[in-house]
Length: 205
Image 1 (cartoon, rainbow, N blue to C red):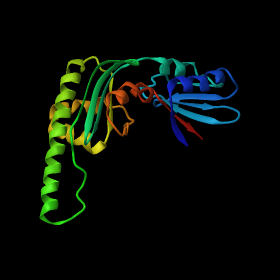
Image 2: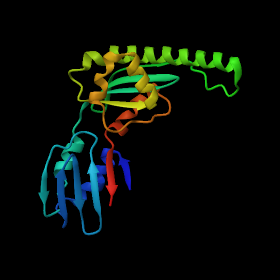
Image 3: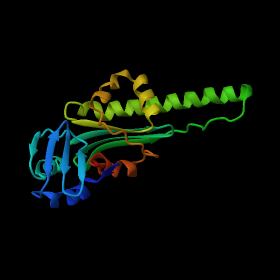
Image 4: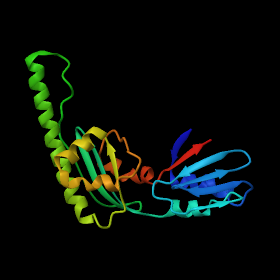
């Protein structure tokens, strides 16, 4: 079973294991920690470069990697709103959020439904173009300094935004492996994002 744990809580959970009997393997971006009572596979959100094998539980390289801060861009988009930001560690150093009305789906049929669908598609297109413009304005000047980009909100919306603004294709190459399905991209959500950005995936075997 896998779950994501905030890095501070993960550190509290793992630190006491240092030097205890067991086995540790660092490879392919994960740490496999085998103790007398359990086996944990831990994957930090940012690349775990350390490699090695130890005849005890050795968590110090993992804790060091988890404690590192990174400069990360964030793009959260749903039909209805977007939030774009730059984080230096836990600090939000640049941001821009916006909202636009996009009507829900029309349940009835007929010509009125077709008109409604076309209007909804145009509303969605305007929002995605605006989100792409903001993402380009906020993140492009940071491109050479960003270590990663967190994408979130709705996958279809993010994909549609990049299709409308092909110059943002570079976001995919820096995207973190975890997509963040935030329900409502607002400023407060953006400000709380570091918890999820640095959350560690822990799998109990």
